[in-house]
Length: 172
Image (cartoon, rainbow, N blue to C red; front, side):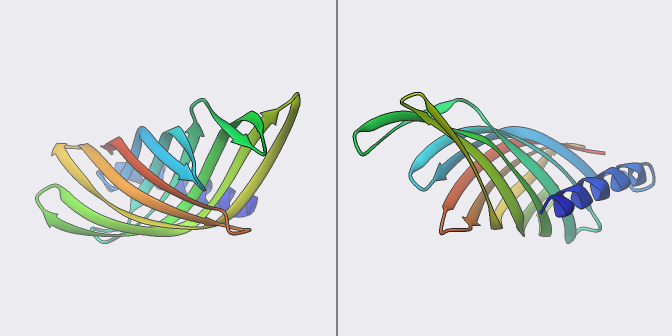
């Protein structure tokens, strides 16, 4: 799992060097993501980078960093649950439907860590699994774009999460 994430980061670093030759193929973005993780809702900052091989195929990596805690009550005990982070690597298929407007679908692997605390005890847990989604990106001013997306996470042990995000994207 860590090897896959490191390989994805290395691929993004190598493609960043190629941006001088292929202007517009490298993209970085940041924004907001809302997650529903098996009924517990989280807010997250999303950070993303990727490389488009052509108008139809690309790769990307992302990190979602949890913002704040969620109060949860189970079996009469109230505690706080926080999403530490989710990192993922994806293959992306996209289709340009108009000037500066693309639809895309993506599939890949994601790893998540969360923490819960109640009654003076703190527990951390992690999970990983398949992730897939779809969205749209609109280049409103040259290399500047906005992106909206949905991603479904199907983690091990039947843990599931749905996320909805909006972000700013800059192409180089």
